[in-house]
Image 1 (cartoon, rainbow, N blue to C red):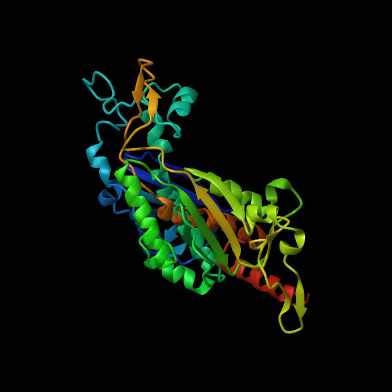
Image 2 (tube, rainbow, N blue to C red):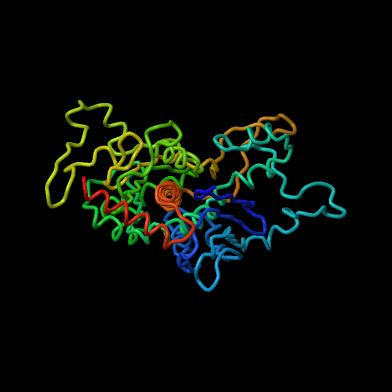
Length: 388
């Protein structure tokens, strides 16, 4: 039985390490930790990040599944140490602590908008730290590492994934695709428009002064995606649905649109659907990409374009009203170390999740036990498409 690309992550925000195990990766893929570390470093950047990013220097350690720089086809294990663990060895100890009268750094004041209260009620935790340590967005570090591996496989077949911020209370004008990646990576807030970058930074500064937080919107683009990933035959095989689920699984994400998205609901069909053209030299083509590269749950050869809305972070330096779960008294919500705005970093996490879903669909379509076998399947399919 063939296994598609799948993964699990484990670890707490202030625990010893984050771990991810990937299954379904073919043998023979060149893979180096340094390539994954590039995305881990990108995730830590961005104007508006908090003090935790000054502590951590995220680096992945591959402990299984690779020999002499090539994947083996066996499960891949990725480990990322938490440097802040040194300050939390007692509070997050796995073993019982002798002589402790109660858990240190206990949390009983849930934050509105976070998993704190509902998680504590669901799992019967009286110390909310048992919830917030795993529900923290620190978990996305492991996902970025998993996505980095997926990107490495996709790159073998000319597929690349990029992201840029298009709104933190503001929205940038259209910029040619070829400039998006270059400009975004030069920006403190990963915005491709320098003028709007200044507006975004000013908005973050104002929010910080008020003890508030900001959300925003980032856009993901995957280029080089072939026709035929995903399927229309069952609801759970539609690739747009799978991408939507993947995006909403990221902490603090509240909305997803593909292509024109919600704008398509406000326009007539004549302004929404991408007309189909044909030429002997190039085959089928489209002059627009309002569908965002997906029709009927299947990729159509155009760039896959996804936009994701992130809500403001739940930890406010000027906390909102809450209730102490132990005393039931009215209190202010707990203040954990946090960011003012993490939208630029969230775009990197979004890249990872889009790469993972595209990798899964790609291996379902062209899967094999080795990279060489996948390449034969892919090349054969490309030849087949030329006959259309």
